[in-house]
Length: 171
Image (tube, rainbow, N blue to C red; front, side, top):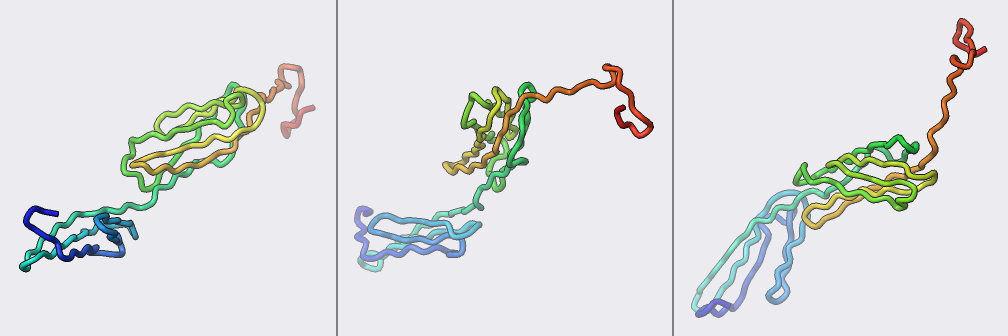
């Protein structure tokens, strides 16, 4: 209460309920986002002897953030790291990096450079890498299935004396 102003009634409204709705419970006002955009919340009070007071404040509601990885599964050969890239939709800052973690660092480890996640194979097996993005207290995440395998051995047939026919078939 304001000194010398006894509130008899008060009212709170959203100028655009498609963007934000409001509810009051005692002295607590709750504002809930309803759609993307900006609106004003107006609080009006009426007191004794026709006294009135009002205040307003702007509320901006953004779209939900999402994260997408350029792969949902990958095979990583030991000694040959793989880079996956995260794309964040509806982020306020393009500069905020992602975080990543491996479900089993004995199988694969991860490192991050902004939105690029490097997966390095440690031992043969499978694990999951989870990539997270947090902004303004909201976290979104996506996962990639990782299979780590030994690097395949490539045999050099030509140095072993093998030859090819005219159609490049080994003889």
